[in-house]
Amino acid sequence: MKTERGARMNSLRWVGVVGVLLLTACAARAPEMAMFRGNAAHTGVFSVPADQPQGTWEFKTDGRILSSPVIADGALFVGSTDNHLYAIELADGRERWRFETQGSVVSSPVVKGHTVYVGGLDNRIYGLDTRTGEKRFEFRSGGGIVSSPALVGTTLYYGGQDRKVHALDLETGTLRWSFAAGGEIWSSPVVADGVLYIGDSWRRLYALDIENGELVWEFNVQGEVIGSPAVADGMVFFGSADTYVYALDAQSGVERWRVQTAGEVASSPAIQDGLLYIGDESGLLYALDTATGDERWRFQASDTIFTSPAIADGVVYFGDWDGVMYGVDAHTGEERWRFRTYGEIWSSPIVARDVLYFGSFDRRVYAVRP
View 1 (cartoon, rainbow, N blue to C red):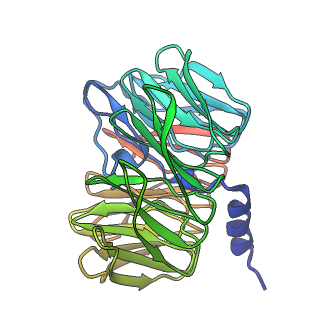
View 2 (view 1 turned 45 degrees about the vertical axis):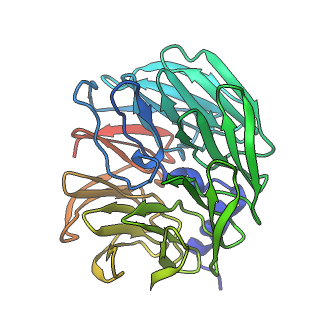
């Protein structure tokens, strides 16, 4: 018999809202750039310049928050299922502007300079002025966009429900190339050393040349690749719905190790100091040695961990479907902090200095100080 948790996992595949939650970002000094999971390698380690104003607040939208936020230009940018992208002042949680699309915004934005780019389920990529919300750019894609884009130079890389990976030239507004995958793409792309890594619902992880989109290698698994991979130390790490976490050689795609989990894995890994942190459907968060896959510790949350962890100051932050945001010690796995919301947490957190930002199914964006 299918469990309630399993039914919810299947429903999120149907909705196609998975890849976005893999979200969080950091801001760099001018020209500012902020993207999903903090950097193009998606390691989930965060730092934000000290000149970014901070405050604690709640901001309510008219829809659920599945998108993960990014920070730039003194604001937090996040999408909602109410068909809007919001810009929220970091200092006090006031709305700076909102931009209406024709579909839910579950993808996480990416910021470069004073432009924020985001994809929507209305099949479009938008480029908006971070200060005013004025539309600077619009590109119609072949399907809904769940995957959170990666930006390298002037090229935006993203996957879609049209079963393709696209490279969009932001200067010309045209596609540089497209790659036809076997299934819908919910995973967000990772770029490292001239190679793009991305998974799909056809149970594959692909490595593509970022210059021309040609296939470098592919790796088959036994379940959908929902979460986004992360690259570190010459390896690419990812989880699958087949209940395994994998480590592959980034250049060849040869398997280094695999570790079985207690449930399906939709979370994206966070990596720091030789340890990989990832959650699963059963509510377990694992700390694994990146070189061997050996388990260092595990932590049991109340419900499914769909969010991707964020690491800051020796603490791993993540949320679960019981509406709880946790902070656990990165070295021991001991709980150090928790915060309860009024809905499931699918949005992955971002840490900026001493403030944690994330969204919830209760339609709120939170800025809390652990």
